[in-house]
Image 1 (cartoon, one colour):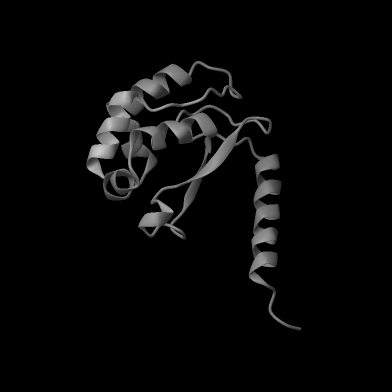
Image 2 (spheres, helix red, strand yellow):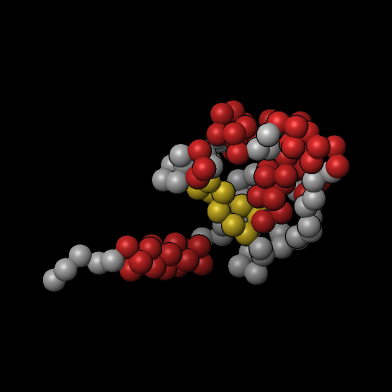
Amino acid sequence: MGRPSARRIEAAIAAINAAAERRLPVICPLCERPIPPQAKSSRHHLVPRLKGGTHLGTVRLHQICHNAIHARFTEAELARHLADIATLRTDPELAAFIAWVKHKPAAFHAPTRLTRERKAAREDRR
């Protein structure tokens, strides 16, 4: 019997992860609210994939929490200084966001936008 394809392995891993998430209440490590099955959520690479973090670990976050991270920091900043949840939580802007979202319902989602100042600052850094 031959080796399974990469696609089959990925599908099996995804099925195992999905089954595990159905059994356990998933908690967002950033805001510490539960992530119900109907909530928008995604996996955050602790070290961005573009900076070598493809196989270095991910965490499940509410989509709004994930968007808040990427609206505030560049991939380089995340890779250099913010490669773990504890460090992300210490950032003053993100701490203010966490304090705000912590009191929202578990499935709450709203669009996250960059301010004009942040957009300009991000473009200046590039």
